[in-house]
Length: 433
Image (cartoon, rainbow, N blue to C red; front, side, top):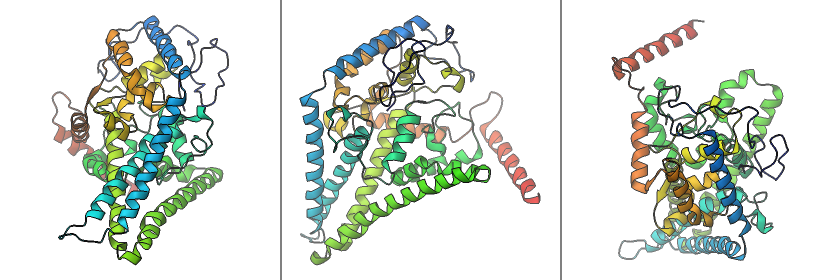
């Protein structure tokens, strides 16, 4: 997990497990006032804050974190155990119903619909409210070996160890930092005007839909850093190549286990009742539903209108207060009911989650009003909205940013034509050489 460390002297060590030691209480030299505009010319949403105000935000958030973490107890433990129990009973009941999924009642297969819906919800709960949060270390304080970040393996194509590295260590450390946070579009989407445009992004509305449908496999490839390997394998050392192959084999074994369970074992158990085919289709649909829902929740927390990105240079010598500030400005929430929050793994409280990744998820709703009040007091945008609104914002952005940025005096189609011509000429030169 990555979070602001306990307060220590500026050059002291910070050793609590999982703490991001890159962060300091203060930088080695005074941090200058933030400029009103970024290098791209876009407004800087924190330009009005002085360094003292930013560190004051850090102090207030430190106090809030300590208050909540010190109050964890039996009620919290009972919550996660209840969610796990409900998820497991729901999955078992749904799979039992699918044993009779081929039975028709007036041309309708009620067991198929009930089993598929229940299995979809069970898979979402396991991935979102349980797996994601357990692997963040939110429940490690319970000292329960069955609900611990070091032991949990989730129902997903990506092995837990690889996911924790790419998500907990990289994404949460470098939230929305261009060129450092690979979660900004996962390497296939342009989701911010400050990201460089290329003709590849013309097709990103198609990539986006495909990515949503196959999200667990996309995440597995992303955690494996497959794109980086393919781009740099000719320059990699044999040691690095061997490590990639070991990680690749781990992913393939995980996918094999998941596919065997969903697409062979459970359909085979339905053979005696004649429901093997319908059980297979139910598992396929449940996995697709889980993938699309998970993708939807994640993009709504990171890509809607109003969420900021940051340049690499802006985090040099970053202080605790500045790290907190970046988490608040680089995340967005989804408003909704308590049931919706649970189904999102409480990532509908993405701002609160990015501030405190290891805080029990059931506490995010409790602290959300205080976070919003803090941000509004400091004139910072608290990005939130209904699920349809946030989804619409992201999809519009995906389409809009598939094209190059608007440039005064030039038409976008002329820029596209020029870049396509350059790309074609470059390819022809490469073929000749």
